[in-house]
Amino acid sequence: MKSIELLSTGIRLLGIYVFLSAIGSGATQYQAVVQFRSISQDDMAVFTYVGLAQVVLMVIAALFMVKFPVSLAKLILPKTKNNEVALNGSVKDIEVSLFAVIGVYILSWAIPDFFHNGLWWWYSSHSQISGMWEQGGEAEYVINQIVTVMEIAIGVYLCLRAQGLSTLLRRFREAGAK
Image 1: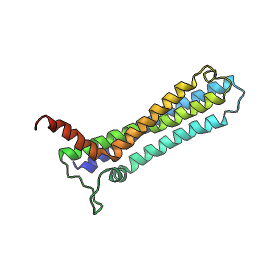
Image 2: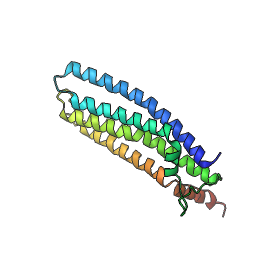
Image 3: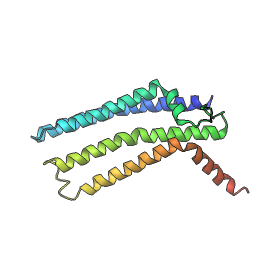
Image 4: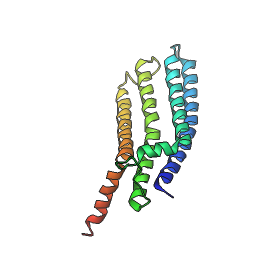
């Protein structure tokens, strides 16, 4: 199996995972809107639309990952000067593919989590029902958002710099042998 096929298979599986996560996220968003509307007189339009946008973006990303995994794999994998994929199936190439798949996996949960945390941060600061903001609970939302941004950075690094990480890992492995 070529590296591009291996990476494409991983991306397609992650697309299925993101689609299933979108279904769960949609159920969670629906439950939250129903509960908040029952106890609040506030207009929940922004909360509803942002939650809906999160689910729609997850479904679009999942469909893209399932329908076009080879195109996405070609964007992620390293290329030669002639713009050809530079992988031939060696152990190093498989490591690069796996690091890229792990990066896409991290991004598949970190990006929706970024919107989810931002939505709750906004809601807690603008709602009269949520007493967390007045009780100093904003630090929790800020910390969650910082952690999510770090997860996104790690995922992007793994996707775009997988070859460099594989080289660094190889140096650590061979350091004791020399």
